[in-house]
Length: 363
Image (cartoon, rainbow, N blue to C red; front, side, top):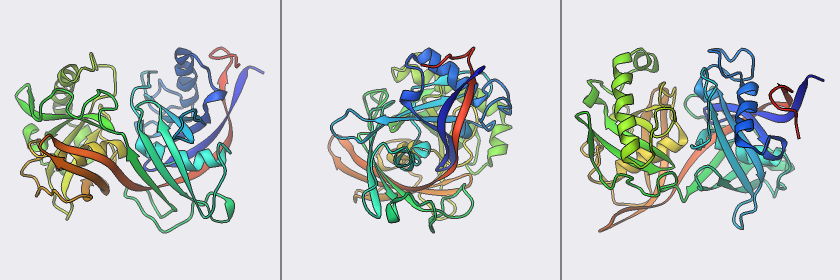
């Protein structure tokens, strides 16, 4: 046979989707692993026509799972962001939307047993070191995907997956404020550089002459904005201690504006070379933390609260997302304990995906 078969589950996790595989079924060497994922997803073509990717960054994501050797965790979750067109794979970030499917996938893969009508799955995010508790609906001893929970950006309703994120501060850079400052300026634009679940560079929309309520298409068509934003992101990445980030998807970029539909703030999130159609779960945590921290670019956009836990509602391009943040305020600033979100997931297909033996001959 001229191809290698790799067992997989094809799942929607939150507002993203992609293959979920056992880490043991893939190459140990990371360079060879990248080659396999490029072939599997079809990176290198705008439609990913020769793979199972979907032609958008939210549909070219991969979850690789294994039984954890960590004393706390049940499952290790290793994430890969495969690019749509340039045959690149980034193993640095994590993805909270894809993580929404990790609990269900781990149970489907029999990496741990079901335990009652709800099963708690403790997940270690390998890329960032974050710990996440996922509560999955398992009535009758099987994962249920049916329910009444709706999330903006996904049609219909499904069973809820409750995610509680811990140890998310400084996962990539080692600090809440990687530059040591609440405010930095690059190319005349004031930003806050923050690392909570995802390292981000956050600015106000009006600093770019934007309202913050633009549609995804309006932003993606604004080449001048993206050129200016990317220049700032690269400078900020260096200042955050992340080195040359020109070819990395991190740090991500976010824009804030006053809310207009009853939320806390309006937000737009970038992946970073395209506008996210909704909102990343990791990015939502970082943006919510920015909103709750006095002295950041979010000052003046909403009323500050010192009451914990606090729900921060981010209005995004397709609706809104709620982040429940447990924190403490002291003279040293804000201390984040955990962030909770409710997402959904659904198993779409299962079986084997195939890569040419010329890419990998198998174990």
